[in-house]
Length: 87
Image (cartoon, rainbow, N blue to C red; front, side, top):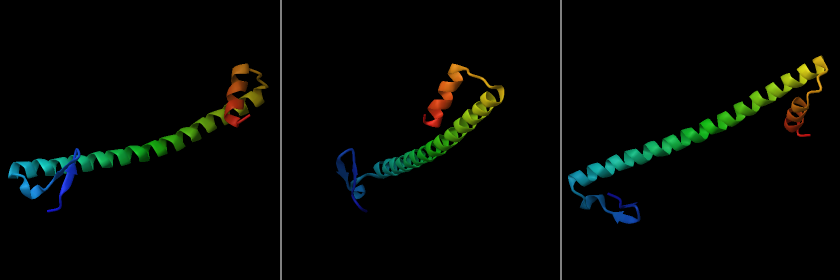
C-alpha cells in the first residue's frame, strides 16, 4: 500500500494493525464526505448568489415601475432604485 500523510505524520498502512487500518479507512471516508460537502456548499452558494441577484433585480424593477406609474417620489425608494441601478 502507498504511504499517506495524516497531520504531518507519514503512515505506511501495512504497519498498522487491523484496527488501525479500519480507522484509517473510516478517516478516508470522512475526508471524502467533507470534500463532497464543501463542493456542494460551493455549488449552492453560486446558485444562491445568482438567484438572489435575480430576485433583487425583479423587486427593484417592480418598485421602479410602481413608482413611475404612481408618480411616487419616496426618498427611500429612490435610494434603493439608484443603488441597484448602479447610479
